[in-house]
Image (tube, rainbow, N blue to C red; front, side, top):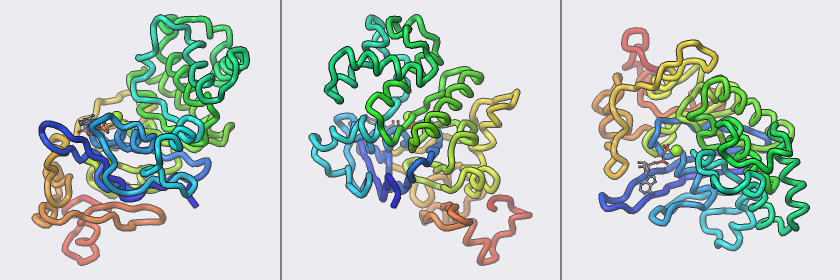
Length: 333
Ligand SMILES: Nc1ncnc2c1ncn2[C@@H]1O[C@H](COP(=O)(O)OP(=O)(O)O)[C@@H](O)[C@H]1O
Ligand SMILES: [Mg+2]
């Protein structure tokens, strides 16, 4: 049984413009000790999926359908007092952008100690010892607990956020864009740290990024999201080497290798559609260079295209039916 199993998850936001279908029927699972990458352009619903798992949605967001099973227990309907026993102690998150939101007037050690004192009910001396241990775990000298956030570089502040996420010994850590906005060399160091912690502590991890290249080294499997849905999922190698969905291919092309000299910014022609009134059929069809009329009316289901590898694109069926020649028209596989 998977440690975490998300099925048919739908999370919507109420807004003045209407209901935003941020996560619109998403399935994925995370095994013990496994690391799953969740990728897709900004605005496709990655953070919303993460906040749904944590049950920390903004006031106007709600899970409207689906299940999130952790060790078999469905978190979607769990009362808040039970969720509190799971949040941080079983599943924790490194929030997107949080390294820039540390309290500037409080010492870093005190900020890491807060969740420990709150959730583990230990005295401040024991908490301080734990803070020192956590700092060392993430590669920071324990004496630096006395320093203020501005005395740390971006990479060091992200290490502090990782220490905070580990404070209550969780089994699953969700890292939401943990290396975005760091320079490439520091990105590599933070990814190495996450990878080492995962191995040494036996953690399971969900690594969220709009940049596919950061997943190549760090993740076992990955899921590609587009406009609130998963369009392709599978083992990291399969998705990279045998990308099937036209969107995945565009995304891979937009983010060359992390080691590469020339890291071009993402540019996939066209814009992410409105999630208030998403396009009918395949949500990617307005941007897809292979789209046929069927794509405008029928939403393709995720179908198996290889061992543990799934993709939602009509081209796969057209190829089976012989109405598509990949050599002439391009596209999958
Ligand atoms: N609190 C909110 N109220 C209304 N819409 C929201 C809210 N939070 C996120 N959204 C919308 O939900 C969609 C998905 O956002 P998000 O999950 O942050 O995407 P990602 O993390 O992939 O960039 C976007 O269209 C975004 O504008
Ligand atoms: Mg996000």
